[in-house]
Amino acid sequence: MYENLEAFEEKFKSLEQDLMDVNIISDSKKYQKTAIEHAEIEPIVNKYREYKTLVKTIKDNKDMLRDNIEDELRDLVKEELKDAEDKLEGVEEELRILLIPKDPNDNKNVIMEIRAGAGGDEAALFAGVLYRQYVRYAERQGWKTDIMNTNEIGIGGYKEVVFMIIGKGAYSRLKYESGVHRVQRVPETESSGRIHTSTATVAVLPEVEDVEVEIDPTEIKFDVFRASGNGGQCVNTTDSAVRLTHIPTGLVISCQDEKSQLKNKEKALKVLKTKLYDLKMREQQGELSDQRSAQIGTGDRSERIRTYNYPQGRVTDHRISLTLHKIDQIVDGDIDEIIDALTSAEQAANINKA
Image (cartoon, rainbow, N blue to C red):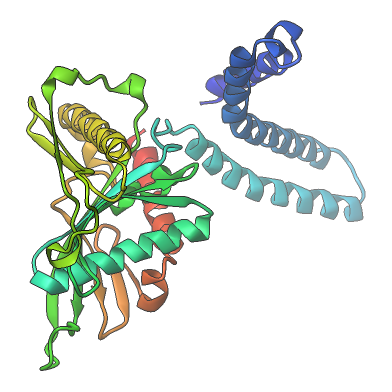
């Protein structure tokens, strides 16, 4: 590990020199690429330098204790030695985490799909709760949201809602949300007071750049239709809604939330590219089964990952056996504690695997 860290430090010094090179400064693309690489390894180098300082402090203090020094000074040296040794253990752990290979998608925006599962109207209402939960979380992070497509029911829920969250690091935080979410509560549509169990599925996909996925236009069937609202009510008098069918895979993407056909088509293409990229990644993960089994939050979407129990006021994440008794705060977007715990669990799994 420490040989790699020496290499990181040498690379960091070289990049610092490059950032002061007039030839690179005058080339905006080269400068941007160099600055990004510099920023990516800076935390590792800073932590390695902290590690080396602590190692030197420990060595110097041990050398002093072997000499004949006054008792008062000896006590001070022992105290400094213990403090440095305690800090060193934590710094070594932080270095191991920093050296875990990063997910190349972590800094990307995400496209989220929430679909009602078992439970009829109650499942659609729960899908609406989840949608608002993630919108509130995005607001807390200072991120933007953009609806791509919705299929609403008339009482405030969704059979399906597709939306984008735009913000640096969105995928790194939300990738753990893919899976089946279960709710246990007395439905708003139920008068007898019996607790029902319903489900909704969540898919979190990293937004892809055009260069990452190429689509042959001849392989796409393009249809337009008239957008409609709840109960078939017309919300647009022109054929602005768009349906794209990718013939090789059978993927069908619809988008009707914009009044412009062109904008709906652009959004539908963005979703299609993201889904094709996701299919490609899942095929690769299937080939690397050991790697996939070590992941906490990007596995099979049929897996039940979380239960929201309203009568008991609790939310349980089944992957890490975490239960929090603050359901109101969580459905209002306060999900950092769950995400932090999932992140730590995946980091621990990757460290153990390494």
